[in-house]
Amino acid sequence: VQVVESGGGLVQTGGSLRLSCAASGSIFSINMMAWYRQAPEKRRELVARIYADGTTNYADSAKGRFSISRGNANNTVYLQLNRLKPEDTDVYYCNADVRRLHTHSCVEVWGQGTLVTVSS
Image (cartoon, rainbow, N blue to C red; front, side, top):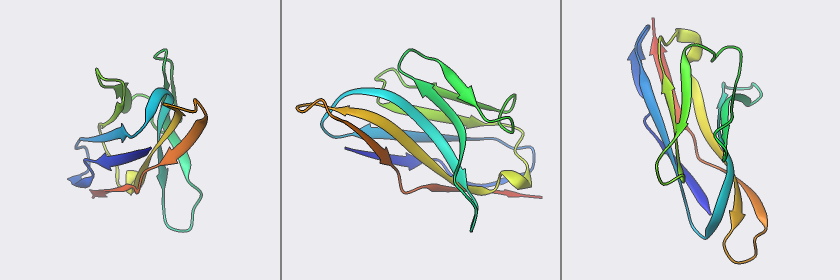
């Protein structure tokens, strides 16, 4: 099971980006998908998460500007980043809590990250 992010890049202050994350492999179900961010030498912190039932949670810094959603196939999650600020510059990581297809055991997976750079 793996997740792969895409959509990062360079954007000006006030601009928007949409990050995508796709899960693949022997997946029975996905309980939760989330986005985290991490700056160099800082702890990885939650940006937003979405559960299988559609419930979402956001960090205070993300409320009102960022939006998390799932694709129709439910193995994809998006993070819409609006009104970006230079302090949003970070590597953004996708995280998923997945129940495997055959064993039904749960596993947490992380992507490699995608860099978002907001210029002032």
